[in-house]
Length: 77
Image (cartoon, rainbow, N blue to C red; front, side):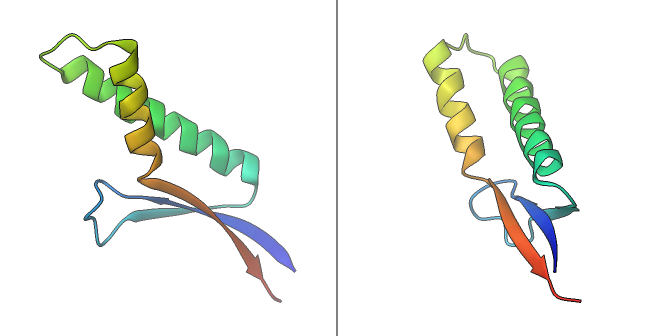
């Protein structure tokens, strides 16, 4: 049995067609997951017309974490 990991990335909570990427290792999926969250938060922070506190940035990170999900896929050969 082969194990793969599916990363599902929604743009927002109403996204009915989220992007999915398949990884062969959990470490690769987890690395991509955290890099994508950091990229999204950095984009929001750099384009915000307001000064953001550390708490604001933490809230952004939590919001982004709800939009990304890693699932384990068991393939039977």
